[in-house]
Image (cartoon, rainbow, N blue to C red; front, side, top):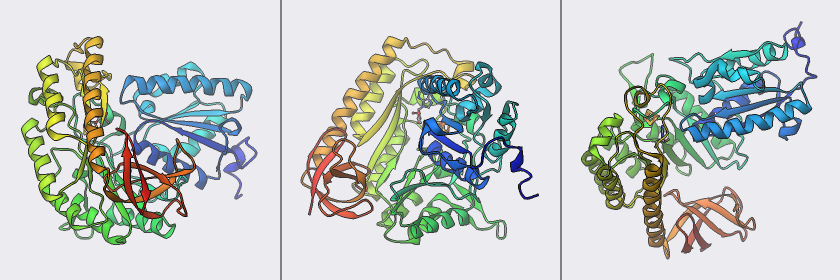
Length: 454
Ligand code: 5AD
Ligand code: SF4
């Protein structure tokens, strides 16, 4: 009887699965939840994509080029399936949620599961295996996968993501995330702290608390509703778990980034002095069209508070070039804001219209592609200069670097990050991944610092 459920598989158990992940850190974290759900159902992780019985692709829908990349990979999955027709392929994540059953039409995809449907994956696999196409794209108001212990797939054993909330309620006009990840919900604080403790026991040295908008984290203890844990409090509780644990978080929303969080960062030396604060545009008019809930002046005021309360704090951002109705003047204001703030780093994108968003329904995608590209190039050129200047200011200084593993470019060296989230490459000597070392910076590019241990 105990094998009753499993006997419906034709697989010779244990069937193996492989997950390929695209998109943001949240997706990387979700893939670890998927791996846990699959392992708990008796499947095992395949070492090689070509040997796996089940191929999952965890997808991103935030820009069209992210989706194109996934279509390219699905082509490759099709070839693998031609060679071994028993292989089951599943599309997970934001593209699954956005495209739903249309993904099943091209014949390559056997199952589709949205971000809140991962608990049903073993069942969907079962259905696919019996020849039915399985699909679950229900979004949830409650699902946080709080009770699931993610299977860490990064393999460095040093840094880990901890999801603290899911979904987003912000409805920025350009963004598909509220539609693909559903409404915002916070994960119970005790389950977050338990996960952090588990990571500490396994020897992890750094956690990154993840959410679409971490500043609106709020968890009401059902036993005592008068006690709401907000993000500042949660950050403090995580920092207090172990003063040697490095704590990071992402992403912050400028409209919700309050001083309480800044004071908490300033108070605990193990909370890294780095804030990712996407601005998107430097033009107040465009920020209003985007429905961002702040304007240029209030954003700059936030930056001033950060620098006052946490001197030397690194700040990074996201920028969108060529959003609907963006004029040369709006663009000039974005460039001037970049100069004024002098961000340490930025992720910069060309606006990509996403079906069904407010912008797609109500505005015209009216900035010609050539102009979008030119503006993006100007933004990137300026930011590269600013990043280089920021890195040059670090040359000669000494930072505590948490070694994460071999450098990709020079595998004989170690790579790790400063508290400011800058990547540093340095000679290995007697060090190993997981060590915290003092590194004196000797040189830099716009992307990386190099140094020597002292
Ligand atoms: N087009 C281009 N960039 C986008 N982003 C979100 N939606 C879009 C879009 N439709 C960017 C924003 C966000 C980051 C994660 O992706 O800058 O902060
Ligand atoms: Fe998208 Fe805005 Fe939510 Fe970020 S805050 S996920 S940009 S809607």
